Image 1: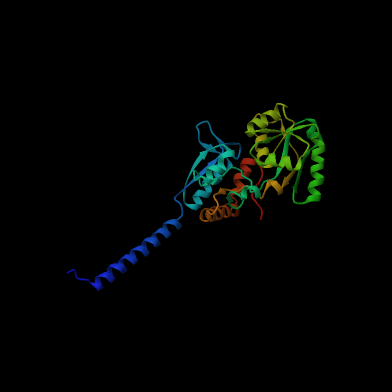
Image 2: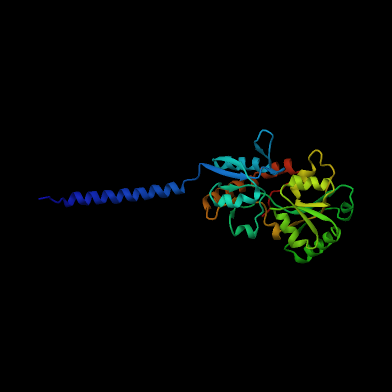
Length: 290
């Protein structure tokens, strides 16, 4: 006959429950532990925000800023370059953890991914040839005009459309600039490009009359050797489809990583790091203002 040992049974049961509880606790702790490595994707060809040097390494404002943020978060960050139009799908597929690529925080993108708080303010303006008729019709204007101010923006955009009548404007095919043109410059001829280099070369060669882009980016492009023939034109528009600024793209629900990036960006904004890095890159301060 097999004897039963109630006391032993109770001990075994209690031990099993304790082990399961501890296992669950350790599982929660493991899930809550901050990441040791963050895989960042960027285009590697959007000068001067990010670009690939001859030795294959990545450089630019966003690479310098990302390294600073990663140091603040005390994590290892790795970088990979990929075409802009496939970044969001790659992020959501788990290939990368974050997108840092001058990506505007727009309502359309917020439907499919989350964003950090902005690390750069964005406003869109025009670049054209120095001494050309468009530069005379649409001189550089330091005004920043909110596209949410319907009366003011409509008046300014009407002036822009009159100046661009009969002209061709270059935009990036996967960027916010093409949405800007389709929303606010109806009737203006638009030519789309896969890269800013191809867009700007066509403008400098006279194959398009103007280009649309973020003011800081166009200033950086105009400052490059060989691009002395490029000048800015017109006011700078923000809000609307231009979005709330450039933010770090993250997967939906990745709240811990968002909190980490938000904290690091706030620190970099507060201590002047973003101001310093952007002024040496773009010759203007792109620090967002809340």
